[in-house]
Length: 252
Image (cartoon, rainbow, N blue to C red; front, side):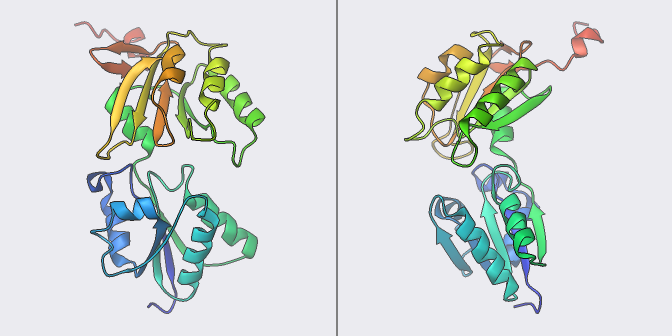
């Protein structure tokens, strides 16, 4: 172990190892200890063989963050892993928040990753080409009235909207409520895309419309992208124009 420990907070990308950055792989290879949610650790099993692995289940984010910090404080080089990007609904903010509360001074490096929203958008075409908002429908940490207000404001401002955590076994009606709020300011036939288990063996992607989202097959591994007033579908691609056609001739 090094005299002074180091903590990497690593974004693994949405799934397959091919979506992982070289920087993320390097951090994992340099680490002596790897901490993470078991499902994510299984995705990188071939890379972390021979390392000390600390695994835990869902809703143990605070425990994982504290364990990773503790191991680094002891002098180890540690990787705390997240799926997607660690700074988007993941572990980076929690680690830094704990350190700020406890006044812990430690060498921390945040390693970015391909976010689930990016991975989903690429499979759908180009739905995020103009301004967009990412909103989580999980009210575990954020009150639903706050989430609903954000949905309403983003809809009124005509942002493309990416929904994280759209549905779970307990939160079965949140996606229905969200769509109703968005339809206050947007046509029910607005193009929408749903990606589930992006970059994993059971990946599925479909293009639908805003009013059809609640009846679609959606779960916690899904990302929902709802277009703005200009979004259209062509040849199986979901496209949000940025405004080039208003300034340049695209038909010659």
